[in-house]
Image 1 (cartoon, rainbow, N blue to C red):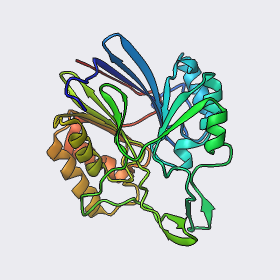
Image 2 (image 1 turned 135 degrees about the vertical axis):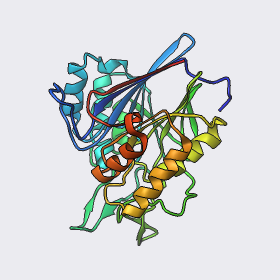
Image 3 (image 1 turned 90 degrees about the horizontal axis):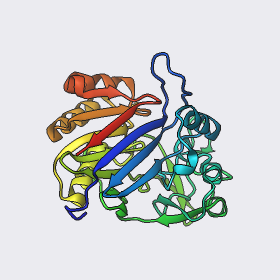
Image 4 (image 1 turned 180 degrees about the horizontal axis):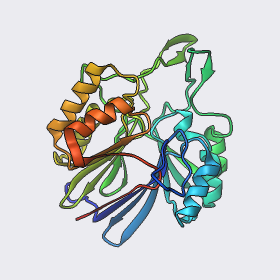
Length: 294
């Protein structure tokens, strides 16, 4: 990313998340969805990152937040899991436009499943296949490497796995050439904003690639070491205490101004992050708004 390519302003609205705040009018659901409003010079774009799994609840929250769904200019799908992608074709139809960019990794439509407690698909569901997205007004941008959404805002592409303590966090499988094999979630991508005078804001879905790996790749891609904020799911809900500890301590070294984690992060990891970051940490909740300006 060219160092001159930085946003003037970034607004993040949590449209869907597992929890809601006290006395909230919004609907919670297992899943996550963010609306990023990115402004640079005279250009302002609205990017929907993930769509959770209940499109009716997502649309209801947008209505209650008085956000017109037609304002959405592009969609990013951080990975294949149904609690991030279910109903994307319906959302595209509700947006009502044509050739709406839908950004994802090339492997997102693969066979993807678990076998515990029983065999079932947890990837892209019927109604949201490639042809459904395209017939609903979406145009797919399936990129294995970083893709610039606009100057100052990029997708990471496939994240290089560097750390020795991070893992996908689940027993996942796929089928290649007729053979069952473990699925390493190579399709797990994140979104990175570079805001003038602030630094990087990293938006994750589930961080199956490892949140520390994601941060390291974001720094490498942008050439910016300053981490202003990190928001999303860290998928530590079933992680060992050792992995949670190592993750939290690694995040501390990056010295972000704030960390907002929820969805698949898990209570134990949230407590650990709070103990380290204190007022700089907050759990996610539906309706949460984060504004970053130069």
